[in-house]
Length: 342
Image (cartoon, rainbow, N blue to C red):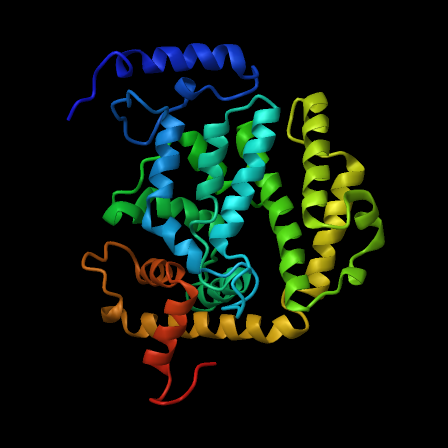
């Protein structure tokens, strides 16, 4: 396998010089990474963050996102978001912000692609169900961001993990929750993740008839716009201009308050409420039932080399399921023959 040549031999030197002249002093330069958990020989055609991006995009957990719920469980239409389409939308917006701020797009993209790899089936309802099951049986908790890091560190590549850079690992772990990512690139993904899901969850709820456009709160709509694309464009412009002045990733106060109002509205009117309440309860029941079943039948987990305690093994198994696989296993293992699913 040829790994040298006039391009490969000078690639990293040229990349570092190009980033030195193009990127903001606040950006993480690709060759100034803090490294990986296990040292590797550098690639002659890709930066460390490009390698991370490629490893994530080619891993099995990333492919499973196409069959994991965003909000609507197994929707009838073809145009509802999945966890994969949410990820791609968040990555696209994040790259736009990173480019405008002269930050490292490759690092931003890698964090964005990996941030939701640990989500269990059925979106946030499935996460709540798995968390409740773990707490009841083992006194432990489940957080999808923590499990995303476990996926890339331990579970992928048959237990070898992806050996990502420390900057990408930090961004994945801290994309949600109280801890702020160390890099500005990670902070972009943390904020844009919310921008993306708020606006496309509104879009999906409108498509499903759960909401009417007239239901949306007047103040945020007047400020941000009446359509998802208009709102995202306005939010991105505000984010870029405010961050430039602050030297950090920030929104203006009025845009931040408008975003919070829309998020609160979604929790009050969409997430686990009204017609989606039954779906959320169904998802929690399926996840909790599967968790209990595999705790009682660990021989059916199918892991040839367990290596971990029972709680961890069952969590890994259930969290890795897609929606349809979870429903199929529930019907196979827990329903009498011929009985319809929950």
